[in-house]
Image (cartoon, rainbow, N blue to C red; front, side):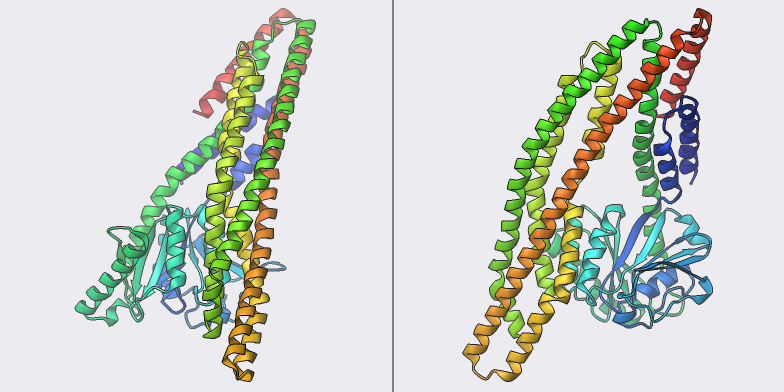
Length: 539
């Protein structure tokens, strides 16, 4: 990618200047490392045996993924352009495998978290910033629904929903996924596989049904359905075009993201150089007064931030309580439905997953995020109050701190909380729900009295609701508090970094005072030249 190389070159120039003045380059090293590995994901989702792996194999032009697998041997697989390396990511670490071993067989989600395939071919090179993710069927494990959202959504531009022409009816779990993706404004492309098995009339009927279902569920007009064949010379031209379009969009996202990172990295160097130039003619006593003024302003700001943190903590406690109540109330409102599902032998994990995730989503957005935004605005306001307007350098820092807090710190808390919920639900599904289903099974076979059986099943449903509500609420509360701590640490780190940069600048100016006048003039000229270069890099 040309734009990546251009940004790396700009970061390298900035590193040279920061090294010249003894400023930290850790932020630059981190940025360059992340740029080299930058990719967006395109998850391929759907139910088991809809042809997802065959589709990806056809896109790549080589059978890298196994197609004759069972639900137990299906694991998430990421495929992207690279030097023909394969990595099996396990609980214990990463195992390097050979491309010649593909497709890998007999893997299970219990011992393998995912497989990453770096493959060198012409098409993948044309979409080198895109990682195609083959996710196992949603009807194999509720954990996969959570993973599809929590792990991949933050870095995805679109999802490919694969539906087989054998069964073009979207199940409830898929509808729930589509609704959640819509709430995040993530587009979904519908891919109908095995189309060559249908007549033209049947294909039109199938496509119309899918469009009607998705439109009804999501209220999205003009749903695009791409059709592919199932064997032989599989036709995937439409899908390749979609992926190329996603690749083009990655450039805009990359530039937007790393422009902000470069601006942040350059800003501290700019602050340092501006301060050196601005204060270069001051005496030692005047420099000491400037340093005391800066430290006083920062101490006052820190006191103001501590007060805002205390206020926000009280507000967060109220929000967390409201979210806990929402989760519990939503589960209790559906207890009768859960009881009926247990009585009929239905799997209740999908239902519970949707209820809890929906409750947490609404709670975070309506209760917590507005308070978080207000908190960030108050911090920015405190910065505006504490830093005097008559000092161009302090004003520059004030503006940057406001920008940093408002953009870098104020991130969505929703993915963090939902990831916690996903973990809890997976554990619950393997523990509480499984135990209750066992109890219900015994009741069905051993209890003859219908009334007694109903009472016991209702009791089991109540047990599930109570335990899931408690565990989910506890987990969400812990994650929200962790998130708040992270926000506060970021704010404190920004203020501390500014203080360190200003202190170093003033100390270096003291050292300059010892230079002869001619030397000082040359020093200012060099500083000005470097300042202009730094400012040009971040434009």
